[in-house]
Image (tube, rainbow, N blue to C red):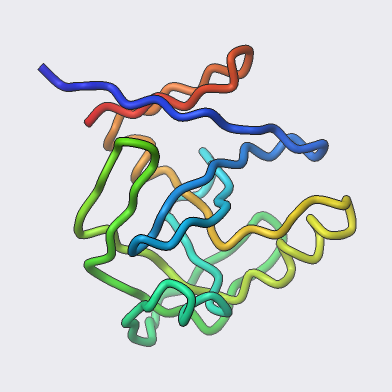
Length: 137
């Protein structure tokens, strides 16, 4: 039987779901994005999380633009409350546009996005009323 892990989240004035999580033991703020196919970390935060990465030839798109200069990092550790995922692979790109938009709305910057691959694999349930994210371990 799989265990469930819950963590609280906040909802910003822009309706973004924000969680606190750790990547490689470093605490940070991430957006939960059900529309993002993969989890991502801001390229400008690569030293903060001690990421090893390689250039990727993949093409990626955000909701508003094509993303250039994409990198890929393997074998990281993601921790969300008591949930822990070894071999956490992420895409790195410059998230300045995302953070500039958040700043314009007076919302604190984020270092990354938890995307659909994690949410789907761990059967995520988002309870907006209680502001709780549940992941199956």
